[in-house]
Length: 365
Image 1: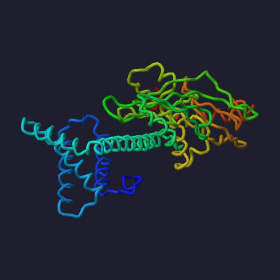
Image 2: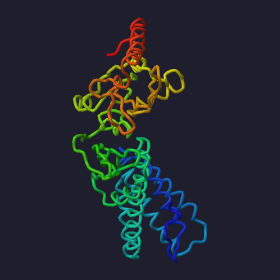
Image 3: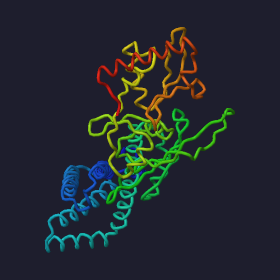
């Protein structure tokens, strides 16, 4: 805030008021990208503020720093008035005022004020951008605070920059977050996100797996959990034109630069083909489906006639069929878990569920 600006011994309350306004104006400009330096509304508001400030101190006892700050405010008000409603008379009066400031050596003070205000505007813009970008990242599912790194990059006023990002909950994915400045403004936005898969061996030694790398734009509505799942060859559920679509990384690549298609998948029908215990409970059933929609691999209980088995469940991105794996992530052929009579009974459960689905007219696209 402007009230936290480092103050010198010759503190001026007028100077403080000028900086308070600059803080507000910076926020306005950051939220109105097409408001340039000559935006009439911006100039009118600034002129009104300066005039009211001058009027407020007209009949008060003023310190020397306040007098200098008021002289600066009067000159700026004249400049604004001349810019908004130019005339020969106003140009002459403004020229005389500038000359008087020069001969009275106030021009040095005015230059100092201009420099301080420009520096303050830049600092406020950096703080605004850092906070806004951090909030945007949070809304996308990136929860690590990188505001410090953002500010250090923003102070260089580059048109583009990037930050390497890693978050423990996405431990198999590396991200590179790319930021860019919107044309004609000082406002930055998240332009795109690079993601690559990683693998960890049994000794917890991290290695990069270059098999999957892709650049994701944000126009498809994808968030961090979606990107992390896609780069690991999983499929996720996204809304396209209000309809659910199940997409994998191959779909993202195939339709790159185009609108993603609506790929139907009847999750409930496919789940009912398998003897999954959690499907019997409505609450657990809903939780399981939501987890799969996000590209997760939830643990399920396979209910066989003579016992149960805990396995991880996931969707194959190519075949759009369910894959089962053990707690170590090793693929499991569910049919190999039972033999003879047990196998026959398990298959009867599956076939019974499939016949029920067919009678209801359910299908998978």
